[in-house]
Structure formats: C-alpha cells, structure tokens
Image (cartoon, rainbow, N blue to C red; front, side):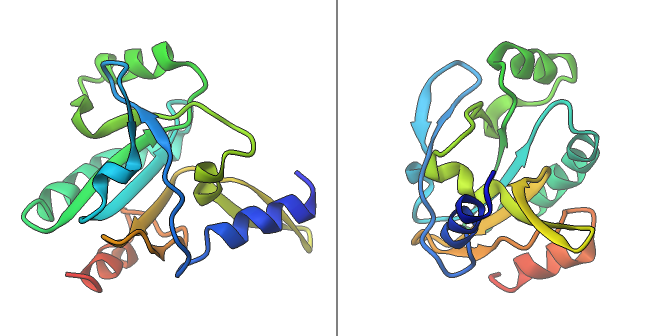
Length: 165
C-alpha cells in the first residue's frame, strides 16, 4: 500500500473519529450491518484462523466478554479469513460458540476495513497494513474510543474497558 493510501486509512480510524459501519456475515451465512450494535458499546476483535496470536488471545477475550456481560457492551469477533468455509470449519473443529463470531473476508478499499489498519515501524520507516489481532472499542453513538492495539492478555485492555464502565 502506498504511503498516502495508508495515511488516509489511518486517519479514518483514529480515536475520536466516527466508526464506518460494515457488512459482516453470520455463521449461518446471513449478512448483517455492524450498525445493529448502535446503542451499546462495541468491542471488535479482528482476527484470522491462520493468526497464532489471534487464536491465543481468543479465550482471554471470551473471558473478558463474560465478565462484562451485565454491562451495555457487545463483544464480537470478526474474521478476516478469505474463505468463509475455512472460517466456519475452524469454529466447528474447536467447538467455539459462533454466536458472536462473524466473517468479513474482504480486503482492499472498503472503509470498514480501515479500522483494522495500523502503522508499522520497521528499520526507521513507517508502513501501513492490517495487523492482527486488532481490538477496537466503539461508543454507543459510533465514535472510535480505542484503536491503540492493546490486547486482552494485557492489563491495559481491562483498564481501557474500565474507563467506560
């Protein structure tokens, strides 16, 4: 991705900006909009089946979701796998409850995907790309509250949630 395109994506996904809703697919292959979660805080876990850190963080993310279940907050996991059937088989094989799992599977210029981008610094240069796992917190009105790259396995994640509850 060229530098200008990366900057545009990063600017769209900065904390304080309005979240761009996207179409995601349920386990039963129904397409829904993330707009349906408005009115509640929304925590999105972007992940993929091939991402070892994603799979490692998943049980911790689930525990945190259960701990906050009495709050006005929805935790969802959105797979960026390209193949719907691979994602679906992965959930079945591991007996993961698909209730809050969704598949996105798109790439490219869709504004919704901007939220999964991060700046990556290597050898003194900045690159932009999708980094997984990626966790984002959205307000009930659609404002991006946290897009910092913190993970559930760190105390910072719980502390960030406690800022709102």
